[in-house]
Length: 240
Image (tube, rainbow, N blue to C red; front, side, top):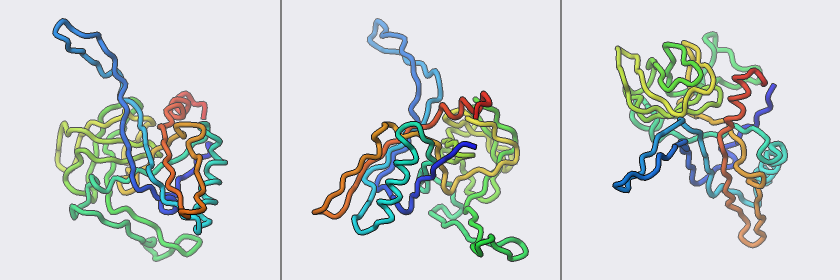
């Protein structure tokens, strides 16, 4: 089983987050008019930057978590699931941020440790299988705003962003997605809209270097991640 580290977003919270799809393009050379035609050859990969992560010297759990993650990842080789805040575009029914609910089973039972289940505010499922490499997906709204254009979701740590809608039939939306599907998404799959994540590597081997400030009593390190496209390729080949 692949060992995946999860970034503790609520403990090591970045002040700024950038999550962007880096597209692969190919230039055809400049024309006589000076225009350089560019062809998009692939739907790219995610680059995610956490900026100014708030760490205070008096919070030992922050430093312990940071060092444990750094040790486990061992540079760019390790895999980490990185959360991408998406509430600004998320399709909440109310049109504004909604917290995830804590619920019990139908028989009012809880987890073994007596904690509730966490249920997302947004519920959207697939209506058809989305094969590897697909750039389109069919979604049924269970509990969400009736607009699935320009939103983000994840499935098994693969992060996607929807583009324009191509068809709306009843409560089923057909939308383009980027990047292309990493792993087969079965019909009836519940997608993660509330707290989507992306499977990544550190962008650099020393990407988690941090400075301890004895005077300012805090640190604000930055960390950059690159989507682990090698993992998805190995998964397709049956190597993981």
